[in-house]
Image (cartoon, rainbow, N blue to C red; front, side, top):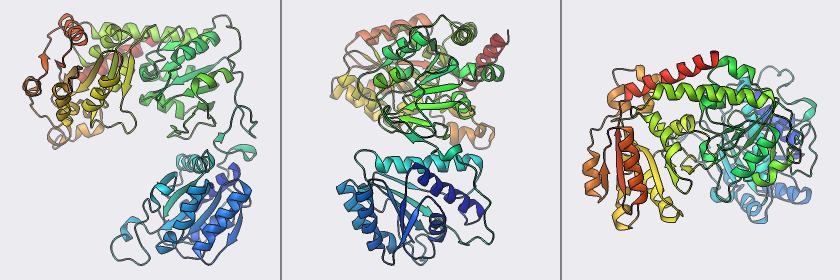
Length: 568
């Protein structure tokens, strides 16, 4: 976060992008720490800057300008009580529905709470009075960071403007020196023709630079992630995709891994460089959250195709800053915009090549897995066995990844839920019991041993609340996911401090909390135990013991077999 050329490059991209989105006015006030922000705003030709001595006056001036103009106005100030003086204006903007973007300069972390001058706690200074807060780092102006900064600027602008309008707060820590000695070269990191990095429009509004692709090219792909509360559009999405012969890379959490166009094993397909390169699309439609798969995320980040998102809640799930179009509609409304009225064309090579690859990988998976109990096999079989009326609640860490990688395509899949907002393992048992309390049918929880130990007190709901839950426990005595990470090479500390074996006897835990307990030894016994739990009225823990090291080796064998199948 030094005020070198990198800092100015990033702040200039921020201001340029605000101007591209439509900002025309900003208010400044004097100070030292805010110098890079003020100079970047003043030197941005799309924005007119209004100078004020008093921050309180500047704040209310901005409120008046935004009310009259109907578009967000920026305010910047130096650190300390200067930022606090903006609070009345920020509160007024919140209560009156006025779009503001508040840019407060701040001391860097090493100058906080150590007696440095003009330093107060500015983190979430305005509390719930702002719609969104972010502490903004301005260092390392790599192409990726510039892209991130432009995405962030668009998000700040559209969030302030979206109904109901209100203020957004970006806190900007800056280190000295605060002034550049040499001028910067022209900035060419934005989109051509002055278009915003990310546009936000209704389908009835024509957006300069980027438009909704009403007729998707033949080489288009749909990426379907976790869908939020409310009616699920899985059936409509499957019919739409099949009608246009477009592959759907569907996370099981989307409930769209169904129908002729669904592709189940995209995680393994996209690990194959040749397949990934040969299947680069011309257009990507994204619905729901971004799936967990790292190969999918990396592939999407590297595409030069236009990417559009149906984003009714403005969730902005785009860590790589590659989505160029957001349409704030529900998915069942929005998919019809993208060529939904067309008749189904003849089956084409594009979808068939995806399906052939998916089938080849599915065969390789089945061959490697066999029938010996393992973590991937349990995930795959749950996708085969569980009826449509069952809800599968999946823990974070390895279980949700295995479900994404190994769940098959089905015409009548079970509903799949997971705590993927913050992606933590905490509270997973309790969350699954909550689902069981309101679900129309049985609930099955797929969970690892560390996650169960983390929330083992949640088992109390079984007896106290009289709730039935079938818990499929994958116990590898520690954090198996960490064996997939570079930290596994730190042999002096890995086992004790990262893998964290615990040696817990979950049969005793089941007895303590009044749960039934089964430990199947083979696939037939596993299915019988799950079916018994799903059909019963008590909570059952079905424990499957696995080995962390062998689990890593098995995943690697599957990946190698998948690549061999694609190569063949």
